[in-house]
Amino acid sequence: MVTKKKTTKKKSSGSVKATSKKKVSKTDYQVVGGAKLKDKEIKSSREKMIGQHIGYRYDVNLIPDYKHITPFLKKYIDIMGWDDLNWLEDIHMGFEGDTPAVFDRNANAWITLPKKMNLPKGQQDRDMLARELLIKFQMSPNHPLVQLKRTYGKGDNFKLVE
Amino acid sequence: MAGLEKKVTAFQDENLSGRSQKLFFEVTEEENFTYYGNHDVDFNKRTSIDCEGMDAKELNQKIKDALKKGYGSIVIKNPGAKHSLGVGILNKLNLIFEGSLGYFGLGCIDGPTVRINGRVGWSCAENMMSGKVVIENNAGSCFGAALRGGDLIVKGDAGARTGIDMKGGTILVGGNAGAYTGFMMQRGRIIVCGNVSANMGDSMYDGIIFVGGEPKSLGTDCIEGEMSDHEIKWLEQKIKNAEINCKVPASKFKKYVAGRMLWNYDNLEPAEKKGILG
Image (cartoon, rainbow over the protein chains, first blue to last red):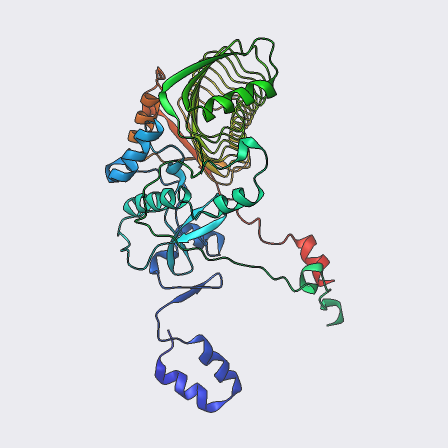
């Protein structure tokens, strides 16, 4: 990390040093794979091994710990008639840039965590929150697929029941 | 440095532009547990459809008509191993087949719980998004190809290329699995209670394969990993939920993962570099 004092010196002595000034920031982030990231845990062994930043920043092989399940998810499992989290076992809390987010495969987009919500510390708790958030978004009438279906859905089998 | 001058490629030439969309929703809005606009079905409302003399298209339409009427449990009689039965069901549903399915059964499903009291042919539950499929007998090749999510259970044996190109979900095989099981898998979990044939996990990028027996040989970039206590507990529960009588205890299973030697796929090959640099 370059100190502020050194930067000032560089600024006064030439154009090359002025360029280096742009890279210095007051925030303590590190640039990995072109992304500015504040989280210090980002350099996982996987990232070190492949020499590049993994954008989503979670372990895809992490198996859910059912001790951390939330009442909402329990209710969802009961309603669907399943024994466990089923497809939600593959859902994890990742990051889009600096913002905690969960990837929605149906919309092919990230759903970012609202700022008013606190991010739990453990990854298992974060994952449960991500699952809850994803269900709420996917089942919402505001989901982009609902709009798509309204606009482009053809035939009786694909009509929305409204 | 003339030799190192960059050639203008199609990607450098074009000004690529995209459009991003931001949508907002309230996390505390009314709770829905099924997709908006889908049919509200009741698991206690039951009907049966006799498949005799019907083709796949007719039967699939009959299932959709029953869904519209609110039937949550549908029994299909005499499926006669016809191909493409029960495809594209995007609703929660309890579906029971009293017989065997042919090729490409239950493709692209999202939500139903299906029980098949028979066998299945090639590519059963291809591209499945969510739900649970239980097969009481054996399954053919490419079982759960490109699986995205959900639980796919076969109580007997599964053919070659089980879980090929899978991107999520869990495949559970009660018996043995064929050659190239987990070929090119990118994510998800495969559990085989018995043995696995040659080249298991060939070219896998990620995901886990749990094996109760022995794999005949490992494919390129498939290596043995370490099992954690948490994974053993999860495995025990998964086998119990699937109602499989596995003779091997979960703690004796072996775990196989990607060796990650293929993770350099975004680095250009020397020949490609030469092409760009001239």
